[in-house]
Length: 86
Image (cartoon, rainbow, N blue to C red):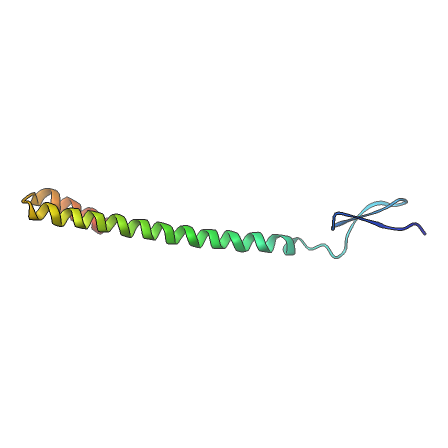
């Protein structure tokens, strides 16, 4: 019987038969780490967007207070509405 040589880790080659799939090959084992980092990336994106909206809302609120103190009540009201939306 001729020896079987491993090519990569999911294909075996036999000089007489040709290529055959490795029975221990698992697509889920290969994909699992990538799916985990994808979920982590989605969580990081959500947290980053929440932080940006919070900072933007704080800036608009601060701008509204500053404008109200200087007498521009109409523009300050618009800034308050923008802070509430964001």
